[in-house]
Length: 199
Image (cartoon, rainbow, N blue to C red; front, top):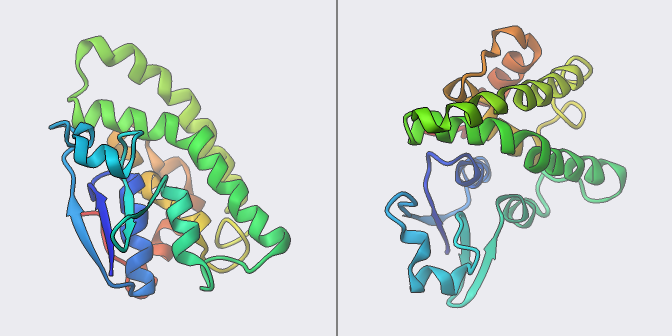
């Protein structure tokens, strides 16, 4: 059985939980408290020297890190990952977009607000994340005006990657009311069989 080390309130960890729920994949979830410094213990460093969650454990000593790499591994052979070619590359394209153009703004703004309580010394950084976050949301809004999901008309791990932080973007100060296509897309994902909420 797989073991997953993570925090369900972290979008990067929730991605894994959501896919495993969709696929009904048996696993043990082991909570890791990042604010308590648990990712910096010697035991955790043996699993991931980068000191970040999530971590997927397979067997006694095989570990896989980075949320989107884990998604690709778990989705192999399922309907959530095209088997090859351009469609598979498009899934990767959106996952790269999530990590470089979406997560650094929306997830960081959420962290500053939700986890740190928006301290005054972080206010300028928080405000600076709003422009980039809205730029990413507009890219998604445009794509979702053309198709039900990010890659065609069926859900893939591209959707799971971007759903994780988008559906809680309001916790980082992003008003999704101005993105009707995104809101409809969120509802479609939440209507999928075996959907599990972050909380």
